[in-house]
Length: 357
Image (cartoon, rainbow, N blue to C red; front, side, top):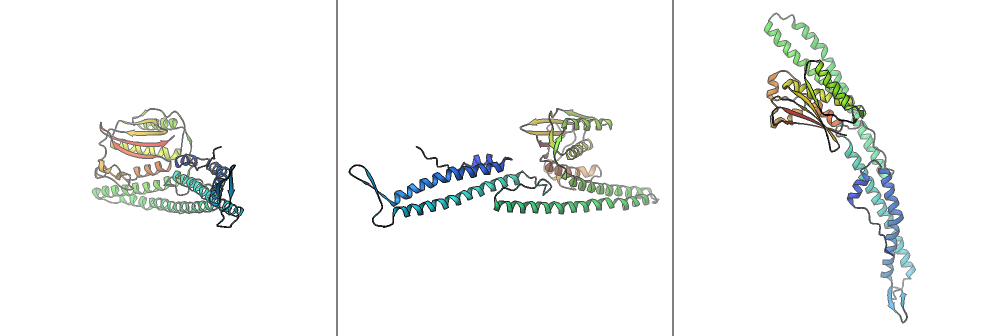
């Protein structure tokens, strides 16, 4: 008969076991496995080892006889009871250690799945059924909830300030009409237009971030893309759609539409022959907005995602807030996606949005 020492699963099998949504079942399975099989056989094996250390085998005339060591004077039953107690205590400690380790693996996997831009708007982390870990999970959920509340208050204040700026800006626009100097009046109007655009961009940014609280749901991406293309065509802009998604996408429809509108607006502002290319690959959906404009300097491909940043070439072409791409990337990260820019070999720019299917 062979002894099943019930060695713990290796690290790779643990990663695949605990990273999934059935983490409670995984912990229960580990507990039953270790307590019913592993502890028993380890106790038996260590008890036999202690027996062999505490006794000596002697060859008799007709077989083998078992005798206690004469030099110690301790009965064999005392040694065995002590050894069994040590083994049971060690088994309980090791069992709790591995159970705690399994709970830590599950918690780490859950935290890694959370978006970095979502401090507490998603569902709270579930408790593990392990007293020490449950207290830690409740503390994490409380910290995330407080962060979300503070961010919501800050966004509300930001939106209120941006909204209240409209009133004095409107009064200043009306007073510009009283300026008799045409050149001065035109300069003032340009400055006020830029100030109004910045205020509107700040308000839009606050509203977009507040809207991230919307839950993800199944979205007809093909229908959304078709409606988007038709809206631009109705406005006199030629927008081409290449490819189909062919299945619903789990995302926030408001955020996805806002991202696409920002990217397409930028493409029409700085280029032409704009088209949206759809491709599904490796469990991800890739939506690329391509244009034939001048592109962006390679050193600024990442800098343009910074809020309020405008490259010298962009600033020279006209007013703008520098928030369009920053908002688009923020929203992309909030819906578990990624947004990147790259220059095309044939000229122009490609803005690629990648989302999980």
